[in-house]
Length: 422
Image (cartoon, rainbow, N blue to C red; front, side):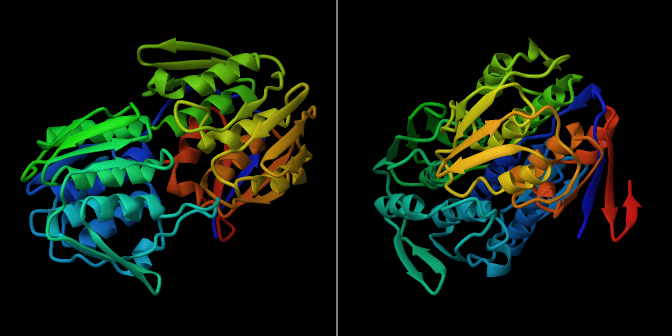
């Protein structure tokens, strides 16, 4: 298994460009299944999850070309409506093919999806919404089978603003007969990006970014060309890296309003952040102050940045209180931070962090994608060498992570079986 070896203590500086958004592309690619033409998607990050989604599309019969960071998906001749469990169990986002396939072909069979073990992420809201649209659903032996004679627009109110359920139901409703109104929807920027893409294909979707989305069903969707929005979680991670290394980093290809809550907390911690039309500059020349924060659905503080900012709080001045409200099992990185000398106490969903002057390098292991990134963050500031194991999880969400870090002065190597890989 590959590892990162990091020598901490360098003050990082320079310019780094953010890739297209992981959470956006993993929704846009399934949406291509709704189209009878070839869709061209730009700024597609080369992530392990993207390659899994590529395999999912090809398994269903789509033609897929992936050159540089552009992917062309031609789903005009889909031949399969059943996904093998070897693919669905690899990634949570595999469930996002359900809405498009059911809407266009009226039948799908798939296993329950897998992904990072960060807590319960049930499919109940997806399935309840599809039933309201007229699907007949059978759950048996770990599989889901959905059938319909044609989806029909209806009123849906989500129990919780689930991102995945919002995306799946919006895609399904584009080809439903009549008008669908979905209330209490998630408001993430990735859903706005999905709406832009769907409408470019000929869909009639309004309201993304608010808690009510209305969709007027159409008979068919055609080809479209689209550029993925920048990855706001990657941008947030690099902002924390600039802060914890007391660096001076200019982050290109980022939309500031998508990371405004993270910017606000970092400024509260004493970090200097300047926003520009083409990016964000992060500067820090002193020990940060501790701040409290609570994860919330967008536009609140993102759960996907909780571990990284907690890493910053471990070396901040004072005591910080972190409350995780989204996933009940998202503190696995705490024990790894403790190996590095952090002072953290967890009580249920609350973590209390007393800042220490410095962390020390240690052998630590990624438990999930964002926890792994957080351990890299901590290792960049720690005294001595840090080894981060199980970094295949980090590859799921960060394109060329070590290359980008080396460009701004990090001392980091990827080690495979004892050999350096550059």
